[in-house]
Length: 264
Image (cartoon, rainbow, N blue to C red; front, side, top):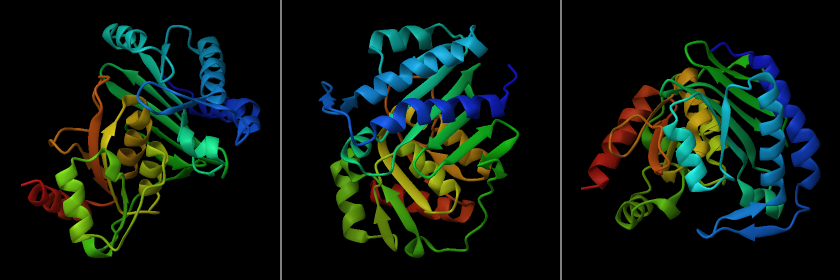
């Protein structure tokens, strides 16, 4: 289906400004069964975007993080085009007042992500991509160039919490990078990778709403990514998936070789 990227971007921006930011660092938190945080902002943004998107594309249903697993699975099983939404990616940061969170929206059709938007409302940075057409940051082309860096000189975005203990311990011991960060928003970290603000990435357990939009943005910008099992990152499933990634092919191959050796 044809996508009006500008219209989609405007809707996400408007909802973030009117619904999300007024609640920033000023909203009570609750805890889900898995220990993750949910706030009134998550629910309000999901509701607002569901309503706005239904007006422009009534035939496309919305799969949101703040739905039951049964509802999510029913939508995935339908085989129909879907919006895939994380209303606040980085809810812990949002609730604590840390200015690193995003709204992530992807369009899934025919088994792949066709378009993706990740909005950082604090910095007013909107990352976007359309499959086969490229990626953009605030409507300027986003192109990941060759860095010429060795792995040892790279900045790494790594979430150690969700990695196998043996792999996490090995990486901490080896320090195969120059420095490491974990910023708390999967979608934004992958987009920052695409923008050259980091060089390599690793996460052990991402949900489809966390990575669907950002994975397309990274790919369309020229970055590289795979699961630790060697598959493409995106899969139309609720099962969490790992991802390792790099801004250019040379770093990706170095990172791939290191992780394969570290996993032995």
